[in-house]
Image (cartoon, rainbow, N blue to C red; front, side):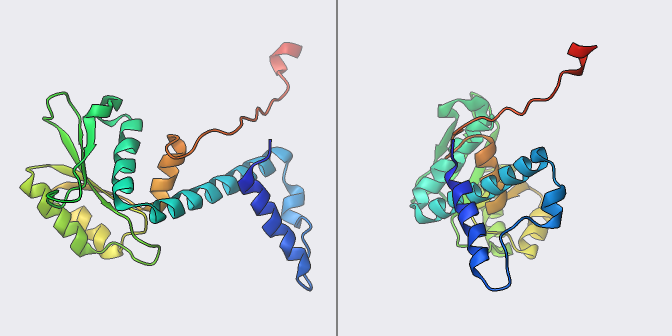
Length: 204
């Protein structure tokens, strides 16, 4: 089974041989690696390419799609008991600074409020956005919230989230992509490879 991401990675590697003074052959370090180590390294490279592809597609999609994605991801992670009705987006208008909510219990006594910012790579989330979200949580009488972005958080944004009286968890683009891959949201298993070794107990 061929992986498209791996094929693209190999093509990029092969391009090196076209440059004067450079070769595409294995380095000394690569020659020392076992086949198992090489497979694990390639697996990480495939995941990295997949993560980048996921983030690129999210940034190109409408904001409403991103909000639904975050709710679906949290449900897939087990929040709200994984029941579809436990999570919902709040729409573009009248959301009062909150994009989604997850009911942790059937009566909605314990809720997780969500803010989703679909930003480009160079546009990081600042401390002001964190303080605004804190104000929204206060208006909803909420004790905790989740702030998710496709970009990054500035140092001041992280410090602000740490010092505020309400628990605000920050998820940047890198963490978001990893969670999506881990919980099969926006991606699926294409193939499974089994690495086997000798059963020492069998030969005793």
